[in-house]
Length: 470
Ligand code: ATP
Ligand code: MG
Image (cartoon, rainbow, N blue to C red):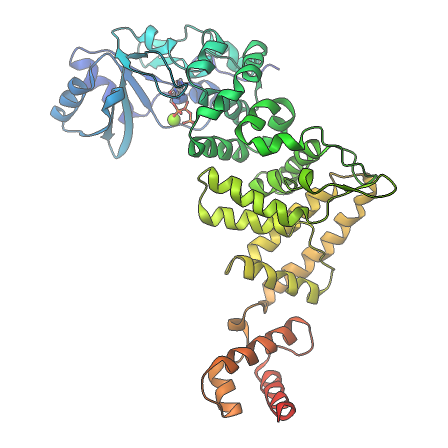
C-alpha cells in the first residue's frame, strides 16, 4: 500500500529543539534530531517529543548546555543520556553510541560511545526509527526508512534475527509500531519475529505489559492476534491455548483465538476507537478461561461452564504479573467475570447488574456497565449470525442504562433517599448493625422495583417492616 509520506519533513523542528542543536553545534559538536520525531514529521503526523543524538560525550553536552543557561538532568548517563529543559520542554540527548554484546537478550553488556552518527543509526531497531534530521543538513536516512514509511512496513535495521536475538523486547516493539501505524511487518522481519519470539521469556514482565498496553491502545490487537500470533502468544503464554481451540458448537464460527480477534475489532468499531484500556484488556482476555473449562456433552457439543469466573481469575493473574495498575486490573477482571452475565432489558435487571458491578469495583458501576454492554455486543456479533439478534436486545438495555444514568440510579445504600439517622429515629433503636441491615433491605426493595426511592415510600416501608418484626 502506498501512503502519503512527505519528501522531507512536513514541518520544521520546534524552536526549543533547534536551540539545543545550536548550543551543541556552537560548541563544536555535531547533533541531530533522531527517531520518533523524524518518523512522524515525514508522515505529517502530530509532533512528537524530540530526541537528539550528538557527538558530545554526556559530560561535555551537559556542561555546554548549562553554560548556555539550560537546566540539565542526568537521567541515564550510563547510556550517555541526559535530559535538558528548553523553553519548558524536556529534550533527551544521547551520545552517539553502539552497543556491545547482549548476553542476556535484554541489556547490552556495555555501550560504547562513537564519533559517527551513521554508527549510532545502525544500532537502532527499525528503519523507520533510524533516520536523523537537521534543519540545515536535511534528512539522513541510510536504511531507506522513508521508503518503508511509503510502503507501510516495519523492517529491522540489519539482520532481523540478530537484532531480535540482541534484544527480545524489539519483537514486541515491531508489533507495536506495526499496530500503531497500521503497517505490516516486512516479510523477512516477520519470519525472524516468529523464530525469535520465544526470546521474550527473558524480558521483564512489566516491559511486556507496557508494550502490550501500547498494542491494545493502537486498536489493532485484533490484527496482531491474527497476523503476529506467535509474538502475542510469547508475550502472554496463556493466549496460546486459545489458538486453534475448536469450540465444538454451532454457536461459534471461529476458534477461541479468532473469535477473540473479532471481538477486539468489534470493540474498536463500536467505540469508534476510544475504548478504555481496561475494556481492551478485557476483550483480549474475556475467553481466556475457555480452554480449561471445555466439557463435551453426549451430542459432542462443547460447553464452557464457569469460563467467565475462571477467566476473571486468570485475567487478574496475567495483568498483575504484567505490572498493570491495580485499578485497571480490577475493572478488566469485573468485565471478564460478568461478560456472560444475563441481563434482561428491564430496569430491575439493569439495577441488579449495576449493584453487582458496584460491589466488584465501588464507584465504577456506571462506566463499567457501559463497557460491559460494549463487550457483550462485540461478543454477540463475533459468534454466528444467529446470535446477532442479541445485539438488538442490547440496544434496549443501553437505553435503560442511559435512562438510569440520567435519572440517577439506586445501587448503593448511599443512593437511598433516607439515611441511617432516619432509620434510628423511626425505629427508636441504637446505632448498630441493625441499621445497616434495614438500609440494605430497602436498597434491595428499590432495586427490585417493589418501592420507589422517595423519602415517603422509604419511611413507610421502614415503619411497615417495624410492625412486621413486631
Ligand atoms: P514512541 O516514543 O512514540 O513510542 P519512539 O520512536 O520515540 O516512539 P522510543 O522507544 O522513545 O521510540 O525510542 C526512541 C528511539 O530509540 C527509537 O526511535 C529507536 O531509534 C531507538 N530505540 C528505542 N528502543 C530501542 C531498542 N530496544 N532497540 C534499538 N533501538 C531502540
Ligand atoms: Mg519516544
